[in-house]
Image 1: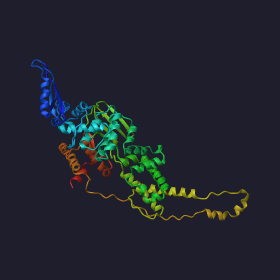
Image 2: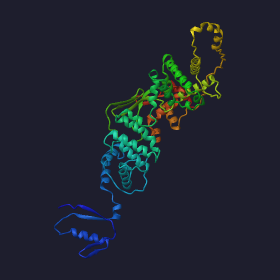
Image 3: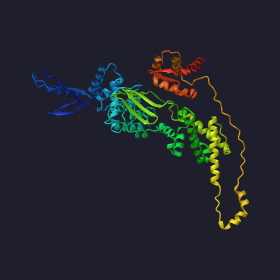
Length: 506
């Protein structure tokens, strides 16, 4: 027997005037009945049978594509997994909808599976407009699903197209909701690495120059004075260029800053086990890295892969497991750099007898070098300011007669008062580790060899993230990494066990 096809006919008006052989249909139900009768020609003949719905019925109608998409989740054990999202997204990659949705949808990890039918129709209708260039504000979770799609290469032909699509969406949508800034800055950087795009694209991401400035300082002898100065300024927590003294003597300060850094660079290279950059920024270590952290992303790259951004930053993938080589204390601004520039500002004010005094904590080594370089610069500046003397040989006798007078005029007696020595300011010891509650609990677990998985799971914190955060906060106190990985498990370095136990037991 032939099957019956269902043909949907939308009738948009409640009353339709239909003229047929002089007859008029004025009721919608009468018209529906007539259409059905016309399709039934005989009992032995089977034809397509129309299923006729009114406009009111069509509002509740959901295209079958959505039901087919949901069925894909049944083939995955975890129907909210990243893989399910990827497969459903690819299935719906070219789908378009036109549905008037005025509801709201909010979810911390939004996926297709967490939406009901109306929300799904609302999302795909909004996405249809976005792809046509009409980016409007919607539920933030809808915006993130669209971002997840592009991160997973859903709806774009190439990774390059995906990068520029994300960048355009970011530029527009951040005006609606600034919360996308926090994530897209990091995800765009991960996107460049994961899809092995040109490193020049990092220049398209605002405030992504930290590593490049450190590389300048690491290679001091290969860069100009302006490049060294600008690198220090960009990394400093102290705004030297806003200083009253700098504004009055900009060239003097620039010269002293660059020369002081050069002296410190050479001193640490010759006399210390670590260089000045490691002193300032910490050690370059390899630690686990979660690509596209907090995003719904299906990692399909299981090959061995390395992406080197520069001398101090490299991403490494081994069978899908990512690690990152970078400075442990990674920050946009650096406290020790700020302290150095502030000390230069303070001591130069004293040398120049500047009208306002600036209080700054100064390490003895820094103080000596700053004072020496300031004196050298002032002396060179004084000599350069001396008038040039041109001697007329024909008047040599006259010159001899007035030589004593000329000599007296050229000699400038200097009376340099001994400046009081500024004693190094001892850093005050504190009784706290400046850790959050969960970080404090975590390090106590490590010290007592207690399990910590439930703690991290309850707080929703990744192991690598909390280890990096604790190491960063304790770096100033110990001047070293406190927690390292042994066989992929975090442990406290033995040298610091007793001290940390003492501080956590108070």
